[in-house]
Image 1 (cartoon, one colour):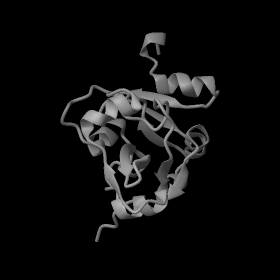
Image 2: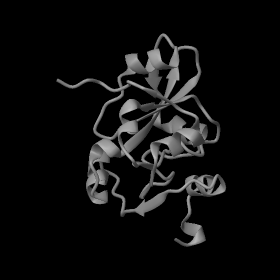
Image 3: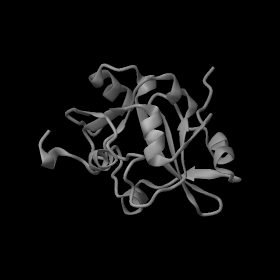
Image 4: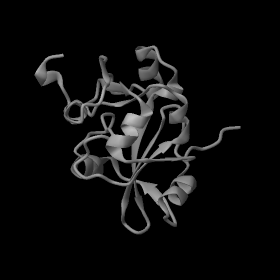
Length: 161
């Protein structure tokens, strides 16, 4: 990968000497996380999306969940110690995190917010998260992600019937 192809996420991981593998794909504005998992040839349970919320207190929180799952806002609030959390508006994402919708990564945000990753991440040797740019994913060990982002494991998804 050429130097100019490296994202900020990759530079952060390189700086901390954390092993990862980068994956690039041709993005499409309508692409879902499950479609991205298909392009990567991976189980959607191992491909995670990054969601940013704001608590009733005004504090921001980051939640990392499998792409085919839905964040349970009540469970998320409980994990964060808030009465309630809500998703931030899409237009707030770039100024707050430095990332655009579809390219938001828990690694390398402008400011480190309390971060929670769904507890199933620990079941896998490697998981995928955005590399901080639409069309790029990184694959790394969950423990490595947790060491870089200093996140907690939590049960934060909606249980489907």
